[in-house]
Every structure is written in C-alpha cells, then in structure tokens.
Length: 58
Picture 1 (cartoon, rainbow, N blue to C red):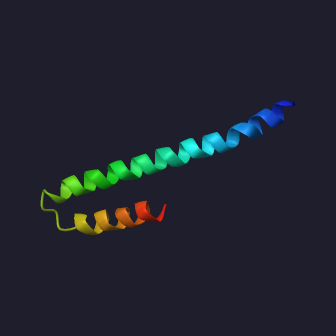
Picture 2: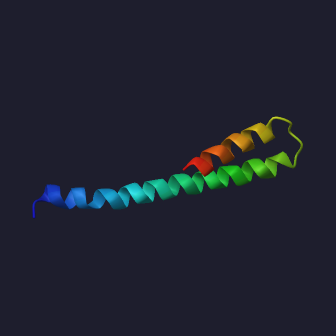
C-alpha cells in the first residue's frame, strides 16, 4: 500500500470530525444566543432564529 492510499483512507474520518466540530460550535453559539436573549436585547431573537435555521439545515 502506498502512502497516498493511506492518506485517502483517512479522509472520511477527518471529514466526519470536522462536521461534528462545526455542529458542536453551532449548537454552542445557539445556546449562547438564547442565553443573551434573556438580557432583553431586541436584535438577538433574529440572530437566534437564523442560527437555528442553519443548525436544522445541516
């Protein structure tokens, strides 16, 4: 097995880890926006809604 074959075999795992990390970061951002909503900032519900749309689309 050549070195190229070994690298290409790792690609799906790296892609899954990257996707999982992005979903985790988006989830944490959604929770942070929800927490900041409690402070009464009128612009945050729109940000929270947009982020929720991104999270449910993935």
